[in-house]
Image 1 (spheres, rainbow, N blue to C red):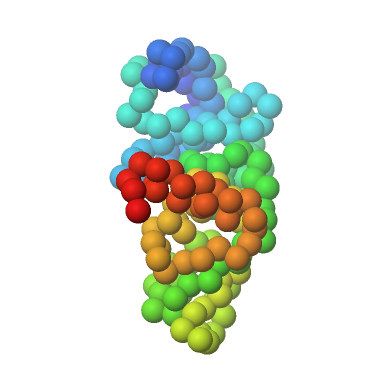
Image 2: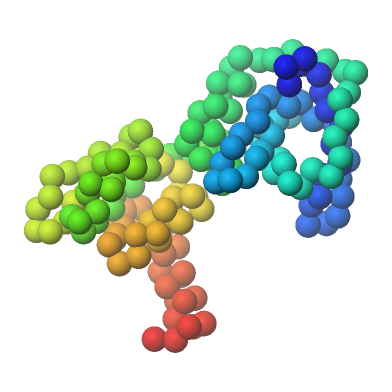
Length: 173
């Protein structure tokens, strides 16, 4: 990365091993895992899980770092999109009602920078934010178990309903 040289990588996938030349931009540490943030020829970015890299060799082929692509990848990493969402996130207005006992935790650990928390009333706080409806957001909401209720968007409510049906079907009432 420091020398701005491409890397030749053998990477483990569900279908087997894949060899290709990659443009490495950064090393990412996320939830006790290491990732390599890379750039495609078209400027889009993606990540490789470090532990799935079987072999890596420094290529003789250099690359020119594009500061706009690097900034875009940094933003994707900060939002979680680089690891759990699409590369071009579609942000939606999200509204979630939480039990007021979670307000301090929510203030100290916001989902993202757009998150706003209303003052507690009737034992509840309302959180509003703009985010991609993806696995990261879904898992964050589910982690609050019985303390969160999604108001909008409907697509997220439906994903949670489907998950509830799955849990009932597989684990009973």
